[in-house]
Structures are given as structure tokens and as C-alpha cells.
Length: 219
Image (cartoon, rainbow, N blue to C red; front, side, top):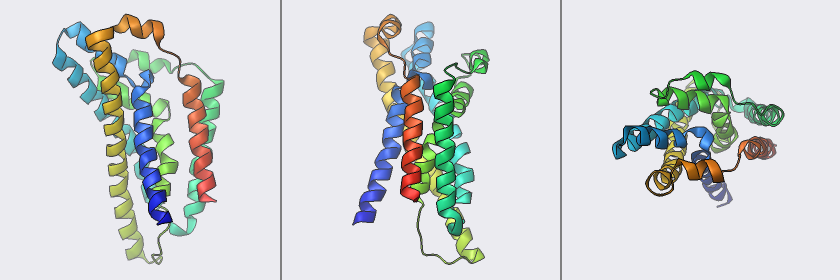
């Protein structure tokens, strides 16, 4: 029963991380509002959100897939999870020290939202935030260390990586889409520029927190 509760908590963490990424303007939903306002088409908002979601999903899978293959090394599972946690913490500390946004993101044309979303998620460590949670979901297992068992475990982990990325991206898109819809139909971008607060520090601290939880759970 305790294991089921732990797994459920980790899946809620995947969803919560998606919602958190979704409401963060740094993941792109203001660009979807801007695209819809410029084209003066409601469907442009949906198209922009889909492009952002596709890019974010690609970024999540690009980060999770290598770890899904590493997670098949059952004997080194704790070390891998601790290493991943330390990596996430290091990124969080770096972002606390360096508050500048990557300049290359401003060079991506607004017509290429999927590419922008992919690069933004990679640059801000959005995928790395999922790694300790993902490894926690794939922890344990009493399979022996034969090649066939390792292959089965790796295949299961790869499938889980895609599913985690999908669930996370769906939560992000719903949350970001809700904010984008409210801004587009009722409040406008002027409201956003006047009232939104900076989430950079919160983002960096959340990376450190998730990394710390990942290390603690691995211990």
C-alpha cells in the first residue's frame, strides 16, 4: 500500500511539474497569445499552443530517454538517481547565480514556436526537473541481472519515459492554455506586462528542491 502511495505521489509530481511549467511565461504561452493577436484568429492560439507543446514534449523525451536506459542498470540505480539529483541541484544553483536569459532564444523566429519551445525547455532545465521523479517511478525491481531481464527493463523504462513526457506535457499545455485563453479573450497583453511577477528565482529554487528530494528518496 505504501508503494502504491509513493507511485501515486510521483505521478502527481509529474502533473504538478507540468502545471508549474505551463503557468511559467518562460515556457512560451505569452508567445501563443501574441501570435493569435497578430494573426487575429482564434485558431492561431490553438496552433501556437500545439507547437509549443510539441517542442516541449521533444525536449522532455530527449532528456528522459538517456536516463531510461541508464535506469536499467539496477545495480547502480541509487548512484544514478543521486547523480541526477546533484545535476539538477547544480543547474538550480547556476540559474540562481546567472539570471540572464539565453540570448540565442531571441534569435529564433516567432514562426518556429516548436523549435523555440524545445530550446527554451532545454535551456531552463525543464526536462532535468523531471529526471529525479522519473527515476523514482522506475526504482526498485527484483529482476536478476541477465541480459534478457535488463533488455525487458530497458524497454519498459523507455516506454515509461514517453508516457511521463506525454502526461507532463499535457498538464503543461492545459495550464498554459488556460492562462493564454484568459489573457487573449479578456485581459490582454498589457495586463500581463503590468501584473506578472518574475518566476526565475522560484524556478531555480524548485530545481534545487526537486534535486534534493530525488537524492533523499534514493538514499
